[in-house]
Image (cartoon, rainbow, N blue to C red; front, side, top):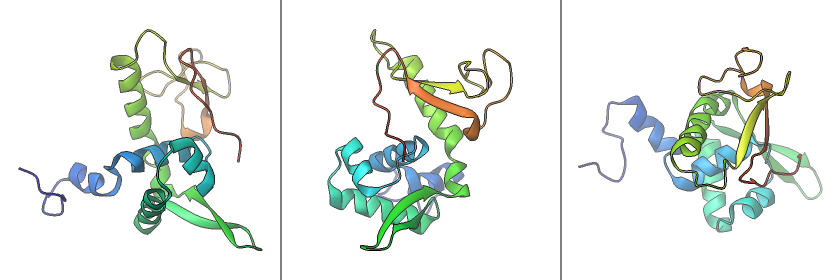
Length: 156
């Protein structure tokens, strides 16, 4: 039986779960991929208690997944941006989204579509454009509301 942490596990999946395996953490990372950067915007979109959000953001910064960057001097305010390490989680977030779309979406349709910026084609399960056949990287994707009507964040 697993304990409360996975520190004794010699497994990369377990080690990654130590960083991102908590519910709010994955949703914060998802929203960061969607362009959310500011504390208040995370709080509004997620509906998470502010102390929980602060704790998760601090952990993500300590782990190197997010970085705090000042965007205002008086008063000093910061935003949270994905680091290279954080951006490397994109395929995992996409896989979770696609799993949910395939197995957990009811009749209302998928909440969000990931489209290829170049041609507008939809991304397939291999992260390839269904229209032009090009591989799609993070910078190539445009998230748009699907038939299930996901609320998209305002541009930061």
